[in-house]
Image (cartoon, rainbow, N blue to C red; front, side, top):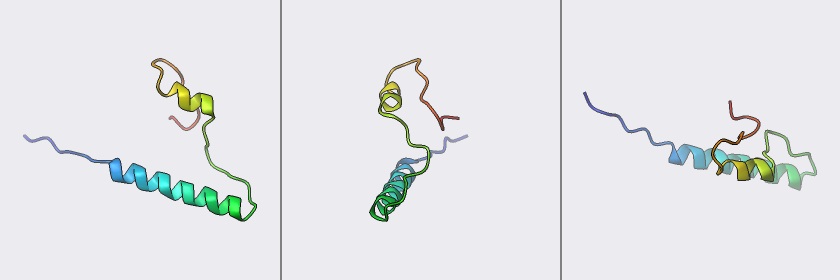
Length: 58
């Protein structure tokens, strides 16, 4: 039996880039920014063990 390597680096980067482009387009058009945008505190908590990562974490 062999182990299969799964690389998600490119997928995560492309998904983030796509969201950034959509947010920029909404801002440019004067539209509200939608989606599941974490607060600064939620982003900080991602690096602290035992803290809730916030909405969209499953």
